[in-house]
Length: 406
Image 1 (cartoon, rainbow, N blue to C red):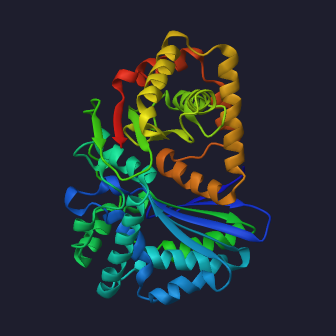
Image 2 (cartoon, rainbow, N blue to C red):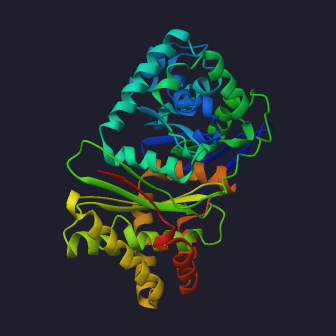
Image 3 (cartoon, rainbow, N blue to C red):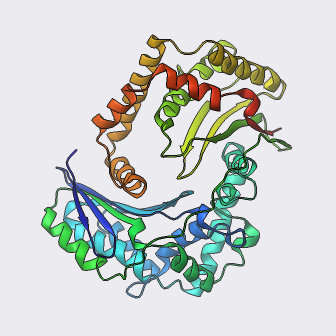
């Protein structure tokens, strides 16, 4: 994939991907998320993502919401542990409108008191929707279990008690203390001349004063296995297993992806899905995820089962992980696992907005973006020795934490 880079004097980066078609996409991402909060303002990064849309020096909330919608476009945002992103999809002819709007939201929000109070109620409803879904809630509670008393364990949505006490001053202070210009990137994709994209970028982004050298995040280095059971009013038992894992820069990150995808990825042929669902009929859904962060990572395995089947399911998982250590993957199994992951990445890359978001994250973390072919070659370079090392270091059942909803 061909793309062009442009760096402003204030450190903000532009990545533009030329693409034929009527629809264009843009994502403005900053390397700030929920792990940049203190315990007193848990949920602030996500709250800020919401209130960015509630008024600027140029627009009221109504005009922000209608600016792209009235021409058939879509404007959205999300917050993660280490990044916040505003993204949009629209017809290519509206590139100037989209770029100006995103800059206005990001740099000129006024955070009106009345709007902040209304948005608190919206987020409280969002939290309640998670509480109504045990398979969603258990993921948040598990992060808190694995990363106790650490920002990585904070719930992205925050807690009702803290959110209700947020003030406008706290919102402004969080932006000032965590939004750095050299930690921002704008990625655009569409059929629009490069020189015009650069001109728009310079027009709306170059006037921001440089804010560089964001302070280092609080490191996490105190993992030990935890166990917790909670009583829930649900029809089945929900279980999540996992532990701290490799960081985004760890040399075993890709072998970790290959092995976790082989064991519990989205494919119906994943090893744990074949055992728990296909062979024993114990679970409808089995899902393993690996999330690498800047200095650590998280491995999780989730499944739901009938209340009386939990012990059997856990025994089967333990047996499979021990078998993996005793009888590592064969060369044939590894090649199949690599091909499956490569195929899944290719399918995901067919979505233009996924490409844009992936490139934005890659530039924030690595300062570059590998092509799909380069990523594939790195996956093909994963060795049996690396897989065995990951299996020993990460997939030891005795080192996994457990959270159970009964």
